[in-house]
Length: 323
Image (tube, rainbow, N blue to C red; front, side, top):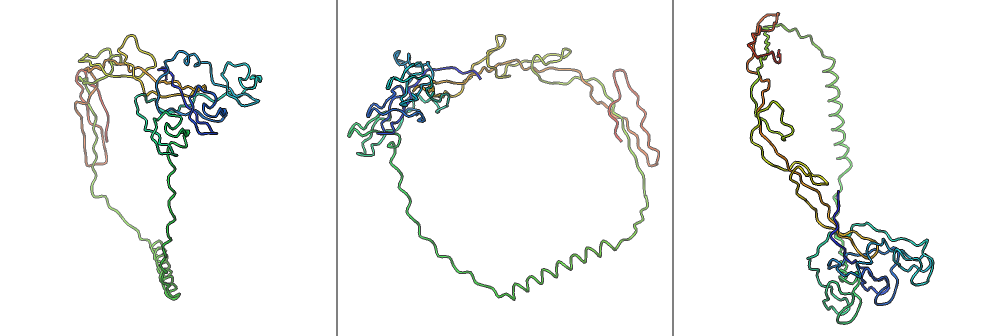
């Protein structure tokens, strides 16, 4: 299915050392300077405006970032040497890319983030608390739920015990019933009698259909109407979905919900899957078809069944036979 690119959004990542949320294009933590680890995943930001800054757009499209094999620093895809240690990046580890991170929601208002230290409400995209400066990482976005307290075990009521002789009596009755049933079935299978039947009456019926060509009303797509049919009213309706428009027919573009695809470089590509709804003419028509117009029938009470005689007029033929 064809994809259309709507633009790019900057992703986020959370520092594992201090919990600060960082912009995706920032390769080291803005708060403590720690590196983004290779196995860390980018996160969908709370607010998702499309990137319109040319300087940031220039960093997009180079490919997924790579991590230095010596110090683990994240570098741009086209870097030759590590920006941190100067090591050769020929054998650098390339970040994963192509994962769908979720639906694109440009106008959705994200809920504020509550600081776990001072309970101050901060904007959804804030990296640090505006009151106390504490980092607002992914783990700090919501206070942990209180663990449920232990529940007291309910005492179980003791079941009354039954005497052993009651159980033995029940089993004995069931056993006798089974033996009686088996004996009855054996007796019935050995007790056979001869049955003599007498035929009281005989009757047979046979019929042959008589068919003629008669007009029949049908509907089909314009290109499927038989050549010998009389065309009626045609109306336009959706017929099929195509990846490309049909120049000869009406084609309306139909697109799905936009979603974001991780590019591996700190940005997400916003795409939508689109196809074309192609319309065509659906027509009513009249055509001559063989239809049963009569039946020749024969019946009797003897043992000599026969087919009825059939007299065909001009334009008629024999149809199905039933007996």
